[in-house]
Length: 308
Image (cartoon, rainbow, N blue to C red; front, side):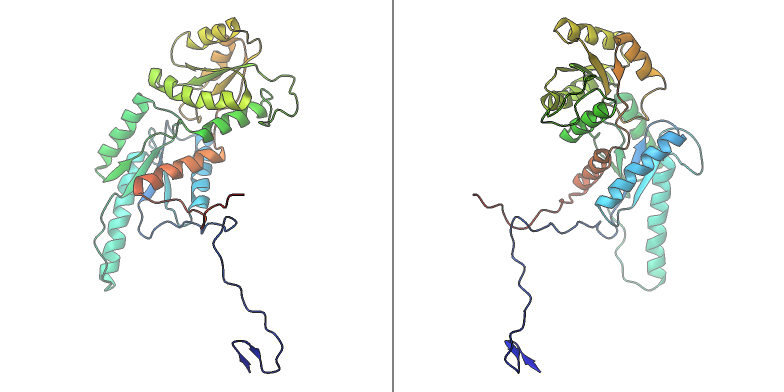
């Protein structure tokens, strides 16, 4: 037998050390609250192989960040039963919540009636686009479901990071922030292309300032859907001394009409990077909007950093 201070033979026993708070403590992982509304990703356009893969990757990232998350995908266009519209997804989510409640009552469980929104709708948009947001709002209204609609994903520093990565992948920017090595094809001026009019250009401009700080080159935002805007911005950058330009889409992908980026890059006489796509930051930002809508606080490390 042993006592709290050691075994009967007097030999010391290694007791577990109490966990102390401090800056090296890892935060406890967050978990989706039981019965929390679904996160419904509102994807522009109709489902295609490319948009399906992108949307599925985004919700997969969100689920990995918040275990237990009920994440779904709804498209603004199309009538594919396998890949339903936003309106259909919201209506089905409401039906499932009602069915779960009725099953619990039938089983004799004392459960409260469902309250609050059935879903939180997160638009898969990097910046504001009034036309697409009107379409999202109409889809929510048509579902006749209590759903909360969040803002778009940007502007945000994580989008500047994603843009930097896409430019570096295309050989148009240095991959590191410290500029420790040279890329021969690196651009010395960036056109940040967006869709959605002047409001979208202003929002992209905020992210553009963050990107300019990362790359130490001038960055100017312009609208793809405004005739001549990309070419005019290219002329302005060249007039200020930039000789090698690059086009960086401040766009996720599904909202871009096919061929528009290629045509804009030709008008500007420069190469272009791919759209943001399913970069990990997109899934994290979608989840951040969902958590903010529900008042869920991201986990924080316990303790406070110690000064040196």
